[in-house]
Image (cartoon, rainbow, N blue to C red):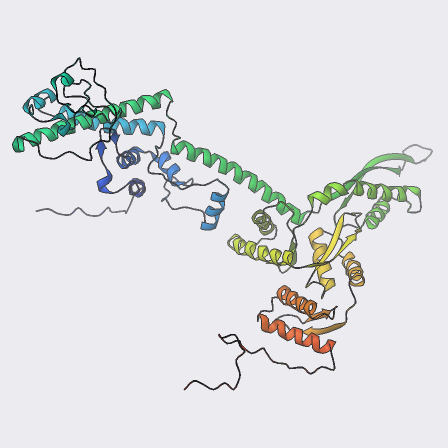
Length: 564
């Protein structure tokens, strides 16, 4: 009586997991009917299954795109978005291609395995091919499939001589053509679609014919495998092995990720460390008490470094340095130091103007409650910028993809809106290459826009008020301003600077988009009505939403009768 074996006491061990991973790859080789061997060699499905069967741990892991864990289950570690990003960069491909060889060692082993199996079958026949052919003396060689060599496209007769059975000579069965001395030409013709299973002579003759066909098929397959192995050993095979390609891709990806990690760390430092704009070494003379009996003081000279960083006030930096080193602020040394620092800052203005061009700016409230601005530079990868931002301000990594998408959407909206004003600004730290821009929707709260600009450009906070005042004076005067209640947020003020209806609507649309008011056209219409009623105090205000439009194109009437 058959008894089922008990299950393993401890579940699947590492070898079981490895075999399951092989089975997962082998399932992609093909269906059961695809594992064939022909005179040209094994089918792609049979070669694929043999390759996977003989693959080692390193080869399987490379095919799967696996990680460092030797007991890895075969699941991809990257998220779907990360996989798509790496594919777009050309750094990741599909993990397995069933039609391609794995490695030179694996391919030679697979060839040896299949060739050995075919050779063992050939050695197991009880008769020779000559004996079988003598039994089938009255059977047409074409029916047996003996006269066709799939590798070279030529036909041979049962004795191995070239035979022009595909020639145009109608008397193709004449004795002169069958003779070894025949010079009749032969050329390629389409191979017959198949050979009959039965031949004249009964069941025994049919079985012998099938054996002859099988023997010729296996022999041709062995020869094809031998040729393939010789090409691989000689290095003449042009196909790139999958494991080598995966290893090359892995090395490229590792190098790419290493450079990317360095770039992210660099970007992270830019959020936490202010850029050094100028640095000067200054010789400072200090008096010291003398140990001599006459009691005269001695002077010693030390070198001190003065640095101006983005966001500093040059005037304050020089005053603090002078006070710390006992330098009289009324002397020429004080004015000379300030002038030299400003000149040094100005020398790098042209380079900074190109390197620090911003795509836009987006304010973000980070986990500790601070308001920080993300302002990517032209040419920077937004994903890397946000990753560096997340590391700098301890944003949880699972939230980074969503944060990237929202920052990208905010920057795209800002780029679509019209730029109303651009002001050249000379900052307290001496920079003169910066510019403050106001796009449609930001003119309603210039001070807040100036503060966000100062955060993005690392400008001294005290300069934001002056920049906002300058922008207010440069813009057209406010004609009408009224408060707008935003649910769950602070009240905003809508400022109208033009009486044209189209411009008023554009201003209201930008205001709704910037403050994310929602409500669609109904909200915009309500703001436009409020603005137009204040611009035209004598007009009658119909404070209601527009009627919906019927399918026929006309406006639906409130009193329309229902259909009977």
